Amino acid sequence: MAHEHNFTSAPSEECLTKEQREHLLKHQHELQKEARRVLAELQITQLLSQAGTLRQVGSAELGLMVWRDIDLAISSPALSIERAYDFMRSLYIHPGVKEVSYFNQSGPFSLAGLAERYYFAVLYNSTDGHEWKLDISFWLGEGLHPEPIHEALERQLTEETREAILWIKDIWFRLPTYRRDIYSTDIYDAVLQHGVRTPGQFDSYLAARGKPTRTNKPRQTPGQD
Image: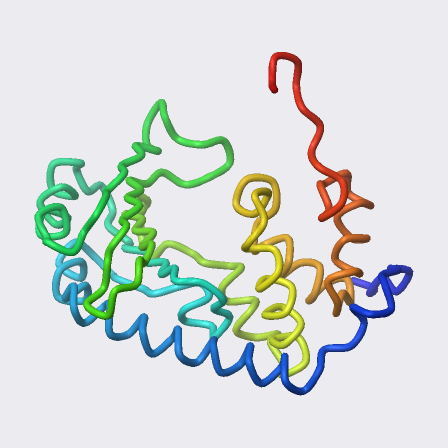
């Protein structure tokens, strides 16, 4: 796909300084090390690999971390929810776990266009005092659940695109629209498929698609304050 080069942004945002670059890469590396400690503290591999084929995906695996979030995918064909709860039990009763949310996205509750899964969102306070979010998906389809976005990122990431993604994510994850209107997949698409390299260019990318930018809030529907 041809890159788009007609984005505009404020001149002050067009250059990632050496200090910013070093900070982003150092912070990312530190978060990855923390993530490995968290997985060890919770004994995640031993716990969830019993349910099927466990795979760590997302930013913690790809080296694109700006906040404390771990994505885990378990390919567990035809797993019952009772068995899923059995495998999750030690997390429910772990003294460091603050909250567990469960979403049944199977059968009549499956999301349009997506494979069936049981999804658990876990908030965990690590031994060093940081709150982590773990997204745990038990995928119910036959065979190994595909992760096309993760695999495409593995193939396409370069030093330049990694730095651009970290730069943009570091700004957007602090905004209320992130993970509500704007997702990491938007950033990945903008950088890898459309040549976006700066936060200002990402604003232009979003505006061209009718999505909220940093200065333009999403439209409110009738009845909203």
